[in-house]
Image: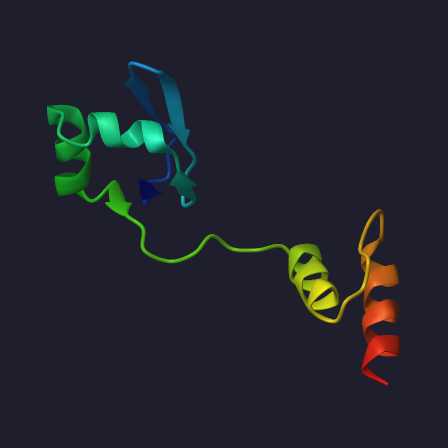
Length: 94
């Protein structure tokens, strides 16, 4: 399950499989959350607006976006820096 911590504080959910930390203003995806989604505490957090189910994909870093673009162009991205990725993508597009 994917949830977003909308509060300004860290929220920790204790599950049978271990603790899940929900960082402030971040989306967390963890299958362990499914085991507590019907618990009173979880429902209270949802009703209070502190957490909500997240539908959007997690944000990707600029490097991850460059790696995806480079791989789409058939470039081997193993051990490449951001600058090297930008250069390789520019050369491949020419």
